[in-house]
Structure formats: structure tokens, C-alpha cells
Length: 57
Image 1 (spheres, rainbow, N blue to C red):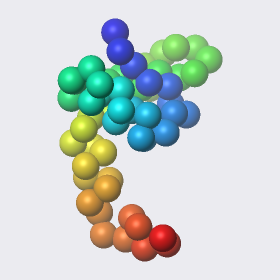
Image 2: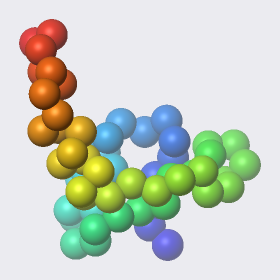
Image 3: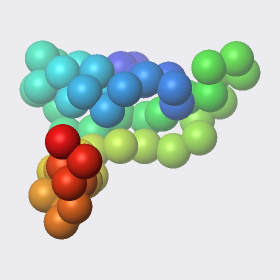
Image 4: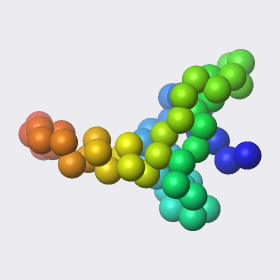
């Protein structure tokens, strides 16, 4: 199962999904390895397209 840790950057999750041609991955707690959520390409797209995301740049 392909997964990411909760403290990994969104960009790393995106690269992992793109490289493996998958639409989402579970997010694991770093120490216990328990699933704490999931993230999808759609979630990332939503975050990037929200107004004001890049307002500080």
C-alpha cells in the first residue's frame, strides 16, 4: 500500500500519486503507523485553486 506520513509536504504526496498513477493515498501517523486520514489529487487541486493561497508570494 502506498501511503504518506502526516508530516510530509503536500508536494511529496502529489509526486507520489503522479509517479504511481493513483488518485489518492492514506495518511499515516508517523510513529504509530495508524491511518489518520487520506488525501487525493482532487484535495490538492482544491487547495491550490482556493483564492488567496498564493497571496503572500
